[in-house]
Structure formats: C-alpha cells, structure tokens
Length: 360
Length: 167
Length: 103
Image 1 (cartoon, each protein chain N blue to C red):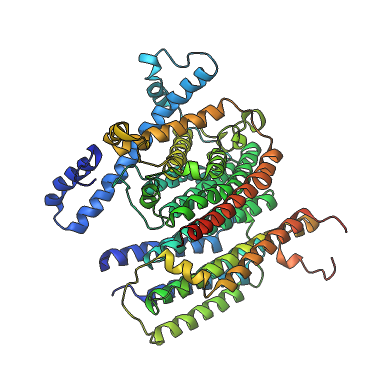
Image 2: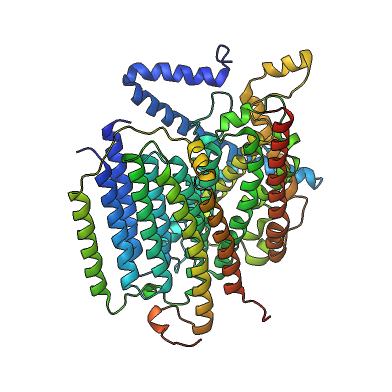
C-alpha cells in the first residue's frame, strides 16, 4: 500500500521533504518529524475536545428528545467556541487554603499522560506516531498515571469533598485498570505482539470483536470506569460530593481537566477501535463492495470507528443511572475481574486447540 | 543514538531522579514527599529507556508510578490529620543516620570507581520475546513463586486492613 | 566523557544512600516505606545497567528486576496495611512510639 499513499501519509512525506534541506542532518529531520507529530497530536486533542463538547450536548439532547445547543451557528456548532471564550475570560481564582504547588500542578499533569498516550495510537497504515515494540503496553502504562493528578487535585484543594473524590478516583481507577488490561490480553495473545501496527494488521480477515466478544464487553465497561464517565462518574458524583477533585477549580484550570478527560475518552475509544474493531482496516465485505471500501483511506475508517465508540460511551452516559461506591467496587472485583480471567483462560485453550488442529 | 544526546538525556533524567529523591527525603510535608516519590520513579523509568530496557520502563511506570506511589500517597492521606507542615519529622538520631548514609555512599562510590568492570560495548537489541522466553523457561519456578507471593500479599493486606472474623 | 556503566552505578548509589538515610532518620513509618522503595529502585537501576553493559546478550538482569518489582509491590501492600492497622490501634505511625512488646 506504500505505492499508493493516502492524503495524510503524503502530507507527512511532503513536510519531510521541505524540512530535510533546511536541517540537513537526517537525525535532526527525524527529531523534527517527531515535533511535527506532537504538534499534530496536540491540535487533534484540542479540536477533538471542541467537537466533543458540542457532540456530547447534542447527543444528550437527542437522548432526551430535545434540541441541545441550537442558537450559535448552524445546529449550534459554534457553541463550544463560546464556551472556550467564557472559560478563558473567567477569573483565575485560587482558594486561600489550598496546597499551592500540588493544587496548581494537578491540571497540567492531568494533561501530560493524555498527550503521551497518543504517541502509539495507530491512526492509519504508516500513521503511527511512534510504533513502539511494546506499543499497547506503553499505552497501558502511561494511562495508569492519570490517577496521580486526580489524587493531587483532591488533596491540594484542602476540601473534604475533593479529598473523598480523589480517594474514589484512586480506588476506582486502580480497580478497573486490571480488567481493562486483562481484556486486551486476549487480543494480544491472538496476535503474539504488543506492537500496535501488528495488532491492527492481524485483523485484516476478522476483527477481534468477533473472536473476543466477552473481552470487548469487559473493555468497554472498564474503559467507561477508567475515563470516569457515567454510570461510573463517582469521582465527580455531583449529587454526593459537589464535583469531587474538581470542586475548587475554575476557568482555564478546570478546562485543563476537561480537556484531559476528553483526550482520555478519545484515546480509549481509539484503542477499542484498534484492538477490537480492526483499526484502519475497512469493513470486510465481499466483491466489488469490498473494493469500494478499500478505496476509502484507512485513517477515515479509524476515525469513523473511534467516533462510533465515543457515541457509545455518550449513549451510556445518558442512559444508565450512577452506581453506588460499594456496588462499583463489588462489580469490578467480583464480576469483571473473574470474567476477564476466564476469557484469558478460554483464549489460551482455544489457541492451543487451534494449533493442535492445524498440526503446528 | 549519538553520544551528546545520550549524555544530555542521562544528566537530565538523573537530575530529575536525584532532586526529587532529595525532596522525598528532606521535605517536611509527607504528602509532597509522596508525590515527589512518583516523580523519582518516572525519572528511573526514563533511565531504563536509556539502558535499552523499554519493557522494564513501562513496568516501572505501571507498577511504581501507577500503583505504588499512588498507594503510598493514599496511605498518607488516610493517616495524616491536621498540621501537614511537620508531618515528616526527623528522629532524634538523624545526624547519626546521615553520617552512616554518607559513609555508605563514599564506600560504594569508591568501590565502583576502583573496580574494572568487564564492559562490552555492543548495544543489545531489546526484545520482549527474549524476556518472555527466559521468564517462562529457565525462571518459571521463580515466576510462579512470585505469583503466589503476590496472591499471599493481597490476601494478607486485605485481612490486615479489614480484619478477619474470629474463627 | 561519555556516559557509561559507572555513571549509572553512581546514580544508583546516590539513590540507595538517600533511601538508606530515610530509613535511618525518619520517624514516620510511611516515610520509611518510601525509603525502602527508593533503595529497591536503586538496586533495579544497577541490575539493568549491568545487564546493558556487562551481559547485553542475555536478559537476566531485567528478569531480576521484574522480580524485585513484584516483591516491592507485595511489600508496599502489606506494609501499608500494617501501618494502617497500627494507626487504628495507636493513632500514631511514628516508629519510636511503637515500643510496646505486647499487642
């Protein structure tokens, strides 16, 4: 497929050819290309957040048989821009008794793992920013850090609701991370590689959602909990603890948290589409229809699947009522964890039997 | 990787690690110590990347950064009440401890500098496969023992923290 | 001077000494746990540095550090559970208050 590059790969190629005479040294050009990738990822995160803020409200409106934002621009499209302007013009208020450094650093640190996780997302064939050998494990490791800023915010705010929220964040995210990782293990066992591009390549004939339906279910549930979205939004549960760790934040500091949350939502959806829904692989249809599907560039498929996953997460949010804390922990440890372990066992036995059957 | 970049990266990461470790040791607020401990762990993860051990770096992030540092901070928050400004006090014998630690450091550094290590300069190609193969062949008993240890620790921690019913 | 094995070993030594000092000189049991974690990290840095510079063709040093990390995780879980249950009993986690010989 290298002979027929799509829009984005040829764009990357032309940026590289512009840069290389300017810099000269090939190592320098590689470094500059990483810089370009980073810029692209940050742009993506910001635009995506703007779209998702609007999208979430529209989906909410759709779920509740109302219009959602509809005043500013066509279908209320410019609503998010108005929101951004409002957030930026707000006073940067700092409560008197906060733990200054911990409180101020938390929103910034929230953003860092979210950006770092994007380094391995397979946006398309040859469009993985850094195709690490341990790609998916890197993603898991980086996203596990998201607990720290929430705990910092909870502690630094010096507010009991914030502290309870921070503690809930730790309990919830550490517990649900285990089924999240285990659910992906099944797919990884089938591929035999941690590299994101190999995981997607392996799904050219059949998507893993059909081979690993239970894992996909566990992944979606655990990912909802990992991103702290309803019905698992106990971290911020506004009817119990005001807004949890975010209570004392306003304006741009609060917006940083928000940005981090939407970046995480996009990241888990992207991983779902890469590991279970075939990533950049088109719909496997027979005959001429399949050729038509192949004509659409991979990154469009990837974006399409990712946004379908995001829609599913939003659908959950507006459909299910919030869990209680003890129910949440019980569900994570007593249902999801054994289920994902059983899935790994069944997958292992299945792979063994398959190998015996083909005599390998 | 060329030497300049490698050296710069090493000194930056080593600086982050040591400065945050110093913070862990000498800050008076134990919550700050706990968060700086997480930063020190990240610095060490970076050092692992420089040593061609990407897998270990990711394990370090996941286990130390995402679990151990968070658990320690969590434990601190469960225990500390008022007056955080002196929550990490030194013991009366701390000058003696400082002397011992400095002496240990001097001895170790002298030993390191005076020893000729049989250094080979082939940069290894890292592979997860190699690690996995060793772990599940030569070291499989240790691997299973580690699994049992983890299970025992988990059960033990739950019983210690929650209390078992008298049998 | 190019960065080599010695640099990594010295980094490990400094980390280890800082951890040692914490264990010697702090009163809070949790601070002592942190010191132990620092020392275990120092050991891991050394193991992986030796793996990289002395025996690069095998992964044995990395395997060792995997086991060290496993033990560290177990130790922290049990250690914190102990500290918390002591705190419940005594409202203190200072190790020099823990001088009773009977529970």
